[in-house]
Image (cartoon, rainbow, N blue to C red; front, side):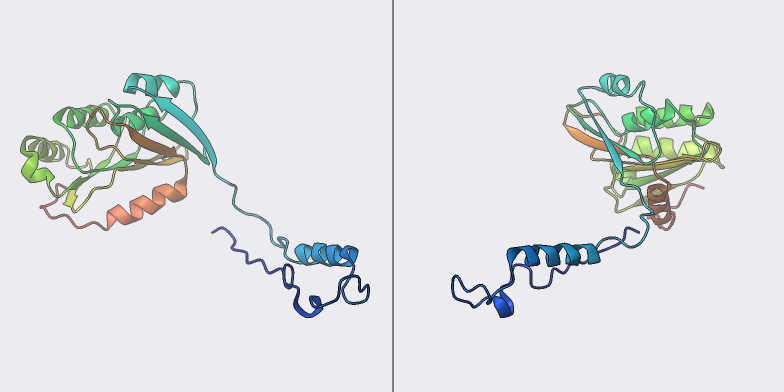
Length: 235
């Protein structure tokens, strides 16, 4: 946790007991030198007295106008621990594009993916990643509309978990979040992705952020692990 500090500058800015004096009365108030000296001492008294244990997050920024441009922009940018990579896109970039950036650099032992909806092509992409070993376990969290409004896609999700019983789980609940979180234990690599985009391509401007941080991964993992599905879970 970041240390909280409260600053109290006493009578600084408040004339108080020595504020009522006649102009030119040298004895009615402290000299400006004395006041400055006392202010410096008071500020010193409130300086940090404990070691800072937490580094400030470092940020990088990227723009892209398509998934190809997005992936190209990050092609030679290593994802570093303690950094956040922020994006603004101008269309044809869905949230899966951000996960592709991660998978271009790391195979993953585990991924959780949260979305309101997704397409059949995206489910096939997850299937390919799982079967090729790029993702070893996948937990999917979908919006409550998904089974009824995306019947074909929901059938594909159930089929995937039926054919791969050790793959993870799919849960349906009142969900509108667009989140990924995952890790590679051997490489001590943990990440979280936050984006406004669902797992489906659309022509709208969207934002995204990839943060390389175990604390953020744990934050999302702990939450989603406790989700109770409306539907019978695919285990």
